[in-house]
Image 1 (spheres, rainbow, N blue to C red):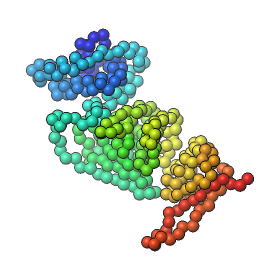
Image 2 (image 1 turned 180 degrees about the vertical axis):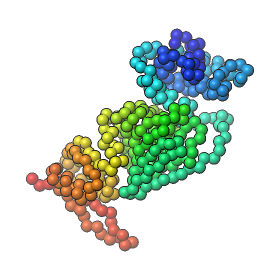
Image 3 (image 1 turned 120 degrees about the vertical axis):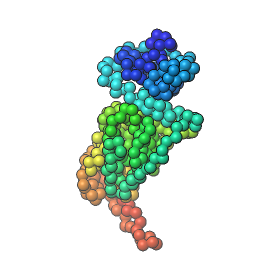
Image 4 (image 1 turned 135 degrees about the vertical axis):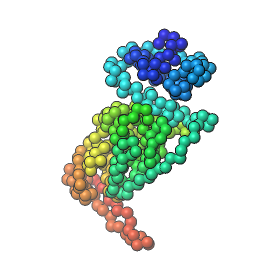
Length: 353
């Protein structure tokens, strides 16, 4: 786009579904340059929506509003060759525009109360899973959810408005029903995942520093919570990528090719692919709800590879002992004053040569 004056014309053609491939390329590049550009786009989009899909005089007085926004706009940069085929443009376009006006709402905070439109009261359902159990549910839009053990999901009986949002504590596998006009959002205590029609897994129990998002198909944007109800995008994931966010260090790591290991639980599998022993015993402790202590710290980085299905903890520990330089002992459980017993505890240590 060579002039500022052409910007609203291209945005209008895009909103009307009439923009050319070249114009869409320019729009994508400009939206990805800054948060300010996205804010200005959403301002124009809101004006467009209010005018019923066009901003002509006589329908609604938008001249002044359009003028204020246009004067702020900087020219779109050239992005020739940015995407190679239309299909890729359509897929990537989901990310910068994924939320429409809703994404800006989440990244920039709540809108002014004067612009809030009253809506009917939404009724919510809550599903919890106990240790060792899983739950399957289908949301009102057709999205399928598999909820892992010790997890909770809160979701509306039916989705209304411009977004589809659920809240999660724990781990769940989502197969999101495609709807580009109503983005799907999973919110946890630390993260939000923005999608339109994708398959992904998210784990955030809140009891550990690390939380994770693993993408199986489609594309998602992941943001983290900031102070003051603000959000910040920290990654755009592609298929077979997993994101790990450590809230104690504020560090984000994206890995390739680790998705299968992270989502195998949905098929009743426990998969370790070159995992350090420290992570192995941590996962076993979570799955079997037992306290496992790795006595010899030198064992933490010992790598292990295995796939388990339906094995008991005792069977897994025996296999670990055979294939690794370890031994283990299970402590005797003492009775507590209320008649119950202490939690099960296992000590793993280096085997003698």
